[in-house]
Image 1: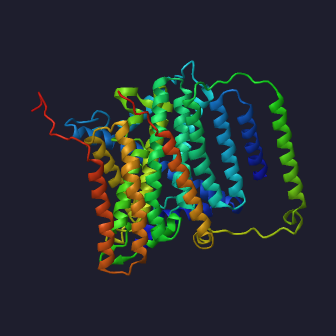
Image 2: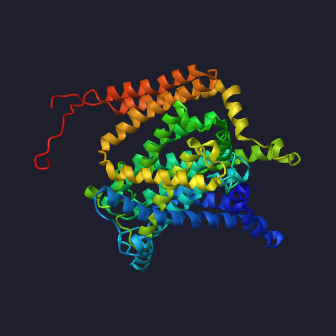
Image 3: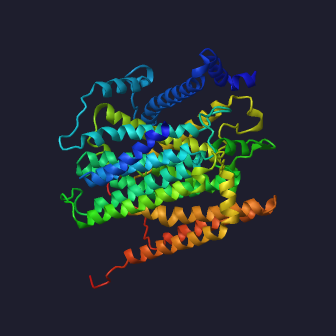
Length: 163
Length: 391
C-alpha cells in the first residue's frame, strides 16, 4: 500500500521532471522523485541508503543542478518537437526496461520463497566498509579527490596578462 | 523521588495512552510526542524572540521591547497576532505554487529534525540506528526550501539572497558534518541515544563529555561556528544582509508566511544546537556528578538556553563577514582543521589512557590552528583603525 503510493509519487516526479517546460520546475519534480525513492528504500528497511539518498541527492545533486541552471542563460526552454533523438531515446529506454524486467523475472530472488528481511544495522555496514571493503573505499576516495583537484585546476586557470 | 521527577513526562504519556483503545495506541503515542515537541519548541521560539530583542537591546545600550505586558514579555503574542492579521501579498510575477510551498517545506524540514533529538532520559521520538544521518538529511532539505523561496519570488534580491544562502549552507555543511563525525567515531554509533549514553559516566565529579577532550573541544567549536553559518545568523547573515539585498530570500514574503520563515530559521537553529549538545555536551546528562538528581530534560533545556544566549551575544557583538571572507574561512580554515581533528580523534582512540594522549592530542589541535591562522593571515596588512570623529 505505502509502496504503491510512493512508487507512483516517484514515477510521477520523474515524468514531470522530463515533461515540464520550466527547468527549475523540472528540478523540483526531480527532487520529489528522489524523495519518493528514499522513502521506498526506507520501506525496504535500508535506513542508511534511504537517508544517504536524501542527503546526497536532494542536498547536493539537486542543488548542484539548480546552480547549473541558474548560471546558464535562461530557465525557460523553447518548445521541442518529437524528433529522431526522441525516438532513439524511447527505444533505448524500452530496451533497458525489457532487459531489466527479463532479468528480474528470471532471477532466483523473485521465484524463491519469501526470504526473511535482512537486517543490516549501521554497525554491520560500517564494519563491512572499514574491514572487508576498505581497499575499494580508499580507491574511490582517491578517485574522487583526483576528480576534485582536476575540476579545481580546470576552473582556476586564469589568464595572466598585463592589467 | 528524583527518578519520578525525571520520568514524569514519560509516565504522563504512558498514562494518557493507557486510556485509549488498544488499536490506536501506537499512533496515539506518536501523536502525543509530536504535539509535545511542537508545543515546547514553538513556545521556546516565542520566548527566544523576546529574549533576543531584549538581549540585543542591552548590548546596544537601549531597552528593547518593554510596552506589551510586564517587561515586554507578551511581545511575541502581539507579534503573532500582527502577522496573522496582515495581508498575505504574493507578487504578480511569482510562481504561486512554489512560493506557497517554500515556507511549508522549510518548517516541515526544521521540525522533523527533532525526531531524533533526545531531550531527556527516555525522551526521544525515534531512536533511529542512523539518527545523525537522518538529522543531516532533514537539514539538507532546508536548503531546497530556501532556494524555492528565493527563486519563486521572481525578485533579484530574493534570488541573490537564495544563491548566497545555498552557497553558504553547502560550504559550511562540510565542516559541520566532519566535525560531528568525530563524536560519532568516538561513540561508535550514529544513534543519538547511544552517543548520549557513551558520555554518561563521571571521573571524580567531571562528566565524560566529549567537549572535555582536546578533539571534542575543537570539534565543538567547529560545529558551533558551522551551525551559526547554517542557520544564517550573524556574523554569517549575508543571505539576508539588509544593507545590500533588503531581506534576502524572504523579501517577497509577508504576513504569516514571513512568520513561518522566522519560525523555521529559529527552529532549525535550536535543532542544530540540540545536536551539538547531544554530540559534544553530553545531551541530557548532568554537568557535575552530584547534580544528577535534577531531571534530565531540565539539563537539556538549560544547555539549549545557554547556547541561545551565546548566539544572541555573538549576534550583538560581531560584524558581518564579506562574501570572500566567508568562503575562505569555510574552505581554507575550517575544512583543514576539521580533517585534522578527525585524525586527532583516531589518535585519541588508539593511544593508551594517560597524560601522554592528552599532550599529543592537544598539540595536534593547537599547532594546526596556530599555523593555519598565521599562514592565512600572512598577506594581510592590518593596522589599528583610526576613527576620525569617534575618538
